[in-house]
Amino acid sequence: MSETVLAIDTGAPRLQLALLRAGSVDTLIEDMAQGQAERLMPAIGDLLGRNALRYADLTRIAVTTGPGSFTGLRIGLSAARGLGLALNVPVVGVPTLLALSLGAAGPLAVLMDARRGEAYVQRFSAPGLAETEPCITPMDNALAIAGALRVEPGPFCDIGLVARFAAAADPGTFPPEALYVRGADAKPQDRFRVARREET
Image (cartoon, one colour):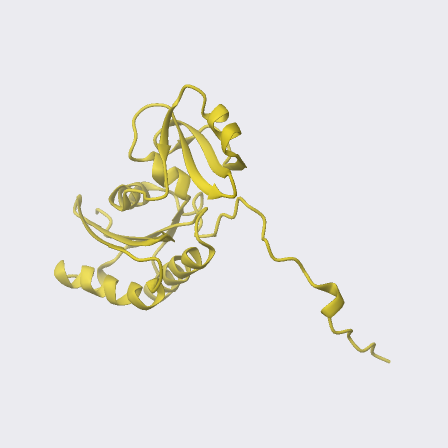
């Protein structure tokens, strides 16, 4: 039996949804820098409705896991995990750099602007087949890592291809967990920490 897959991407300033059913894909894409949390569930309802499907018809959920916007990733991951739990269906997490590689052919490197003069970079021997681990590095070095390979830039992946990839992917290999290549900017403020009272 073929999978009916809902794919979600909220890691960039765009809401991207795809519905894979019986080999065909329908997408809903809306550019938005803010408001994804409020729009996501109504948009999923719109996509299901125009395909005459219910939530109960979904057999698998896919979601991009980053790198990307911290808030955006949490929105997508929370929705995907919640739907997976409520519907008792597998949830597949698709790393964003891998998702970007799906639209290319042959060996390639995926580069995504990480700001501050840096880039996320990862090499792939073929679309969806990682050759190296993702890393963050100065832009000049990222281009050196890419070498002579074709470069696929981010940040917008083809959400339809994400749905197709997730239909056959092993959820155990691709868990729905955020991928933070860059460390957190926030640092603990020890001087403001409240001391715990020692028990006697």
